Amino acid sequence: METTATKNQDILEWEAQLEKATDQHTRIDLLHKIAWAIHLNDTEKGSRFAEQARDLSASGEFEQNPYLPGIIGSLRTLIALNTDAGNYDLALSQSLQALEILESISDKASDISHLEMDILGVASWTYRCLGDYVVAAEYAMKKQKLSQAMGNKRHEASALNVLSVIYAESHDLAAALEMGQRVVQYCHEGNNVRGESIALNNLAMTYLELGNGKQALEACQACLQLARSNGIEAVALTALSTMGEIYLGIKDFAKAEEYLQQALTLAREKKAGSDELQCLLNLGQVYLHQHNNEAALATLQDALLLSRTSNAPRGEFQCHQLLSEAHEKQGDLGAALHHFKQFHTLKETVFNEDTAKRLSGLQVVHQVETAKRDAQIHYLTTIELKREIEERKSAQALLQKLASLDPLTGMLNRRELFTLGEQAIECALQQEQPLTLLLFDIDHFKELNDSYGHASGDQMLIRTTKLVRESLQQDAIIGRYGGDEFVILLPRSNCNEGQQIAVSLCEKIASQVVYVDKNNLCITVSLGIAELRQVHDLTMEALIACADHALYVAKQAGRNQLAVYSGCS
Image (cartoon, rainbow, N blue to C red):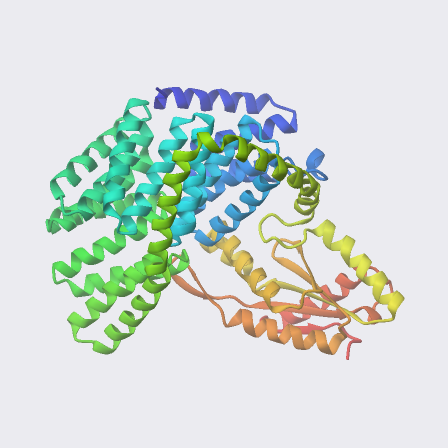
């Protein structure tokens, strides 16, 4: 049995090895290993180490051929941290990147397979938080199958834990109860303390949904005691929130408020956005039951802003449902109707009859597959060999792609931007066609980053570049020049056409409201425009320099606008 003391000793040994390590490969492995081990109790250090591992995996000796285990290992921690913090857009983007890398690896060593199980687990939980139960269940089942094949009981229990939550939230309580009880026993027999504490918390919620408050309290109290006695702070926080929810369910509102306030304070201290959202939703219900409409409205508005910041539709539709009830009690029927309509629309998006059927189908398919596994080994092995041949053909292509992309936004990195840019310039000159370059950055980005944190800054960059990419034609070349500066190359477009595109981008970006740290933010950009025919030195560097001069003019004129390099007409 791995105790907290044993785990802490391992971390100290790894950190000592890290201080002495000079080999880049070794440093990366230690960084992402430590990051994963500490991410639940030291989120900032875990994030910092994971980001260092990710950066090292695509630089230095790995610049041409990225070190894939290092990238996957670092993404594992970053996905978990962003999901816990409620940064679901960023977590989803990182999940898809990690899964794409894993798909490209045909010969998976043991360490890669263990990373794959972790990635499938955190990806499944991210999709669950986003309300996409079908995809969440698919990834959890994939993790379970892989863990069974490797004989890894700990990972199998983790997958079953996630599935029990998905079935409970999808209102299949019988399946959730059976699976939850099995996981508790499974973890207890295997001395998996963390898994057992999580399973007890999930089982408590299932008992509550079944109307059995007494068993719900017993399970949650056992979870809280187990988590606290073993130093599992993240699970203890969740258990406090669950205790509050159980007391809410059995109508002991004073105790519910007491536990929820404790959990809310801890969630905010640890920047655990998903736990904070759940606490706010339940506190809103407590205040409604206590006929404290003013406190209920204020709390639920906070929850609504947080759910939008996190892009958490499941939480958002619950907010609208409760806000509709609160406004109706105050006699504001217009506001009540507005929130009810929002609730109904979002609920249909998150969970509908088709989703229930697909989940039920998945469960049946999974049971059939489990029963037939031994008989299908030869067939599956043959299929896997065929797939491996195809994967080997595409592996090098993926390596080249990873080496050319910015890991955060998915845009071209600076090196690839210049390579393709010089090619585009050469092509334009040979074919005597126009070529226009746009250089843009987010207005006041440094101040926003300092005020709301790097995770929020990353979300702004991801959303802005996603909107830009969707707004441009396929032949446009988009790359990250550095920091929050991005370059757009428009082949066969003159300066006037570039201006029209720039105006459209300015308007689209400014019309998007981003919810960050309980604030509605309107992001704007400034753009500089330069056309190739106006540049004396016909190089990418010179063209960017001209656009940069125009960008400076746009900023001096007040930002949220464009400027054209003198000479364009």
